[in-house]
Structures are given as structure tokens and as C-alpha cells.
Length: 408
Ligand code: ADP
Ligand code: MG
Image 1 (cartoon, rainbow, N blue to C red):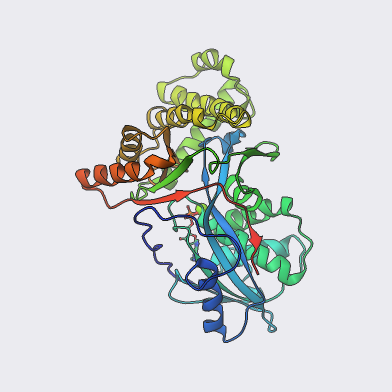
Image 2 (cartoon, helix red, strand yellow):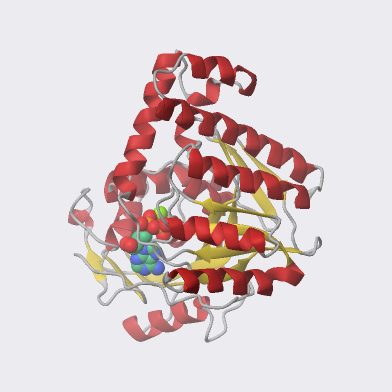
């Protein structure tokens, strides 16, 4: 039941957005469609897509009941699928050597492992929620790099979920899908992620960021239209190996929970910005004070970013992004040299703002740049990496794109 996905093809250079809509042979939808036909010698009943996501701002605020502001990427995962009359599930992926097949007996957490667990987890979570899930054959293709912090896992879950809901004619409104996909990842795969990734890849809208209150799960679509502003976003895949990411993540989480206990609040979200200085005097050590300062100031930066975007002042969010990075580097201590190098090089080459996006200890950097200087920033980051002897970074230009949808 296992399978080892290979790494995504290198992004190298500044690739641009795939066009949504109809499949062409070389694009991701065309690849999923072709892979289905080849593997199963049959026509798929349809193709369903879900994007990767980047978090514009609001890092490590989710589990503190705070705010995040992700947007969907134009990089997508596509699933071509059709019902399987024998009631089993078979899935293949261009990122895996072998297909994974499972039956209803395998729908027990821990039974299907490896990448197939993300698919089995969705079937499991749907059935746990009382839905009669049809057996299916699925073929997956993806432009979202795997394991880079752009949420290929949520993209896979969301695309599979959309396919199964439509194939089975299940009654599952969009607003209830993020929780279900998160349950698949938390309880079946066993990865303790928050609600942000699945919310973003399912609920985001084209040209908007998703302002998500992680306590209430309320969302608001905030206009974030780069096309009309002459701006672009660059995602830099740092290609840094994830160093102790799981242990460090757990340690940060624990530290925040302990601080909330000491301060007598349900979560750090309840520490107001103007109460921060007083709160810090009640904490026992410098490391805890810095962790709390990051979370409280980061929540405020999300609110400030939302206010600027609502007012159409997109360029002015740059300094907030950069301040967020400094806070992650100095107070939350979750950045690594490759990430800091990409941020510094992008800023030195004229980026309006740059920050690490994602949980940290590797992953990606997001830089807001004038479209006209995107090539210069790309060249500067690539040169800075070469100078330091780091692996060649992946650079891709992205724009806020739609969430999961049916393509054909
Ligand atoms: P991220 O979500 O940041 O990309 P994760 O570690 O959460 O990183 O998820 C990556 C894992 O998700 C992969 O190792 C693989 O198991 C699974 N996965 C995601 N997309 C695909 C895909 N298209 N094909 C096969 N497995 C995938
Ligand atoms: Mg993930």
C-alpha cells in the first residue's frame, strides 16, 4: 500500500500561469487526462482541479486561534476520475512509480500509508461523515511542488474530494469541505495541520486573498488583484532540506500554549496588541517572550494587510511582509540561511516586500515585486544562491487564483 512520490519537476526560471479551463496535451489537466486513459484504458468521467496555496501573511497564527491570509496559486493538482463498478479505489500519480489500490477494508487509519493515505483519508473521512462514497479510478497530475510548503497535500485532498463528491452525487457544500479534508490529513494521514491549507485551496477566489479567522472559521474574500496594479508575486522554492521541522513545529506550538496558560487566556489571539508590553512582563523567559511577541504582532500585521488591501493600497503591504519575515527570523526563530538569503537578495534587488511563507525550517519565500523587475529579482536570488553554494532555487511567478473546481 505504499509508494514513494518523486520530487516535482524543477520549476527553474520564471514560469508563468497556466490558463484555467480546457486541457491542452502538455498542461496539468491534459497530463491527468492522458494518464487516466493510458492506465485504465478508458475515458475519465471528468477532471477536477485544486490549487496549491501560499500564505500572504500570518504565520504560526492559525493554532493560536488567530488570523491568516492565504491565496490560491495558479499551480494546480488535477485528478481525472471515473466510477469503479467493483467498489474499490485505485489511484495513480505522475509523482509515484506505482498506483495504490485499496478497498473498504483498508479504510482504517494507518492501513494505507505513503502518498495513497491522502486519497484513502478522503474516502475514509467522507464515509465517517455518513456519505456513500462510490468506488473510483483516479489519475493525478500536479504542478504544485511536493513538500515545499505550497500545500500539495491539501491540493491532492481537495481535488480527490471534489471528484468523489461529484461522482457520487454527494451532498457536501463547499463550506463543509475544508474540515473534512483536514480530518483526512489529521486523523488518517496523521499530520497535525490546522485548517488554513484546506480552507485556502477549497474556498479561495480568483484575484482575492482569503482572510480567515481560525477561531470562528469565518472567511472574507479580500481583493488582491495584481494584474491591474503592475505588480507580481514571486515564489522562491528555497530547496532547503527540512531540518527538524516536525519537532520544532511541535515545540513552538507547545511554547505558545504554555504562554497562553500563563497569561490566563484561551489562546494567544486573546492578547491584544496594546496589551502586549504588559503581557510580556508576566512571562518567565526571553524565548517565550519572543514567541508571544511574534504571534501577537503577526496577527496585527494580518489585520493591517487586510486594511491596506481593502483600500486598494497593494504596494504598501510590502513593509508588512518584510516585518513579518524579521519577526519569524528573530523572534520565532523558524527561518534557515537559504530562506534568509532569498529574502535579502529579493529586497536588495528591489522587491517591495519579502517573507518566508509556510511553517518554516525550509520551504518557500514570497516576494512582492514590480512586474518590470521580476527578472532582476529572479536573477539576484539565483546569483545569491550560487555565491553561497546553495542548491539552485526554483522561482515561479504566481497570481491569486481560484480554489478547487471541476474542469471537464
Ligand atoms: P506540502 O503540502 O507542503 O507540499 P506535505 O508534506 O504536507 O507538503 O505533503 C506532501 C506529500 O503529499 C507528498 O510527500 C505526497 O505524499 C503527497 N502528495 C501531494 N501531492 C501529490 C501528488 N500529486 N502525487 C502523489 N503524492 C502527492
Ligand atoms: Mg501539506
